[in-house]
Image (cartoon, rainbow, N blue to C red; front, side):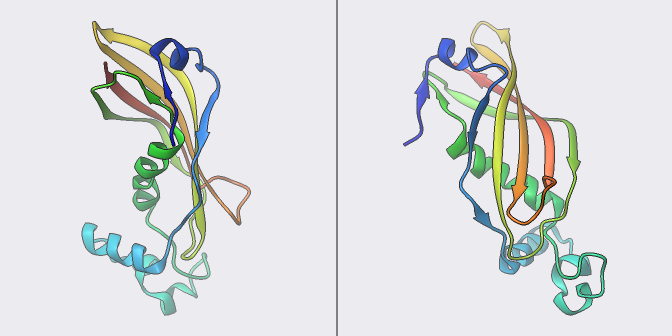
Length: 152
């Protein structure tokens, strides 16, 4: 079960790692479903035969598919804030897709609290360092600073 922290306990984690998610396999079926949902059927994602001759040697996940997995990863890796009434994605700073995620690989999210600032009487802005690691690669698939607004 995910831990719940008071605001003071959560704020004390500034500059520290918040957590790491479980591994999630990125199957060709999920890549194809994402292609259908976004209407992005570029061959490097969905044509297994043609992608064998690409620089990647096979199909790879869309960068935005990898990015979208952060929601599920963060839900299990980042402690909950006691009294939070909402948590809203505000965007990203310095988002980069560093390495491809090959079909069938497993990925996991790693999160650290970079900064927390008050926005209003009951609103805070979190800057969370987020990276997606793959099992088979040294470089992460994705790195960025996730900006999240939390209301308490």
